[in-house]
Amino acid sequence: MKTNKLRIALPAGSLKESTFEFLKKAGYKISVSERSYFPIIDDVEIECMLIRAQEISRYVEAGKFDVGITGKDWILENGSDVKEIAELKYSKKSMNPASLVIAVPEASKINNINNLNGKTIATELVNVTNKFLKENNIKADVEFSWGATEAKTPYLVDAIAELSESGASLKANRLKVIGTVMQSTTRIIANKSSYKDNWKRQKIDTFAALIKSALDAESMVGLKMNAPKNMISKIIDSISSLRKPTVSNLSDEKWCSIETILSEENVRNIIPIVKKLGAEGIVEYPINKIIY
Image 1: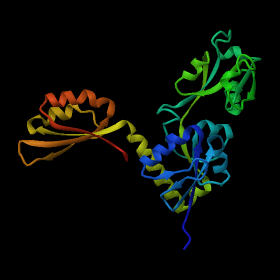
Image 2: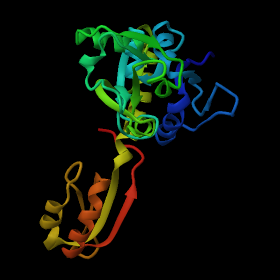
Image 3: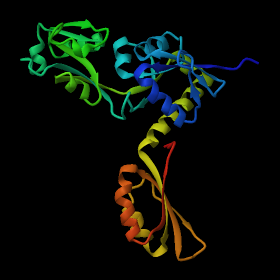
């Protein structure tokens, strides 16, 4: 009997490692040899291939793949007619969205986007940049950059339009930002015909839900403790949790167990408070997935 297959395009290059990390947290065991473009995944109904993020939306639209993971910037750049399934707020190095910014040398007399009239801009995202300039009534020459874009100004071009997460690389190259074209996050996309197929749609939705649950859990932890019953209300009031905490009875009728899920950044403030309120046996533990 022939096994149904879901063909997935995964991003090669800078997004690869972070994408693989979330796939593993989502419950998929995935590996790939150094020179291979075909990852091995522990789901016989899934076939994967590594493709440059710049190309994924085009191949998904054409039906070469059922699903792809790529940036919103490349979906717009390619003008791809695809079904967006989920937004994944992570980028190549952080959990922050990347911004397509226009930058010039720190010493440049170009101080805002209106000064770009008649200038030359280098970028990988030519269509997106041209659309931005048109919307702002700016006439500039936008040329495609094959890489090393930050090094091209002021020697080859007047400005660049470059994706940036932290701005560190721009600062290292002595560039200043004079405008933001767009923010881009990672997206799970699907071929529209594939998504109309009942089996593929269910498989796609499950795949997307598991990855999104792993991403949503990234900043969350579980917290459990034993506490005197007469302090339950005060302890619960002190906890900023995802939902109301679970309270369970212990063998000692004067004590209970309280368990909740909350933002990791809040834990360091909450633990001293609940400890002072009489909580004991406080345990913080990681969360792999959260399904809303």
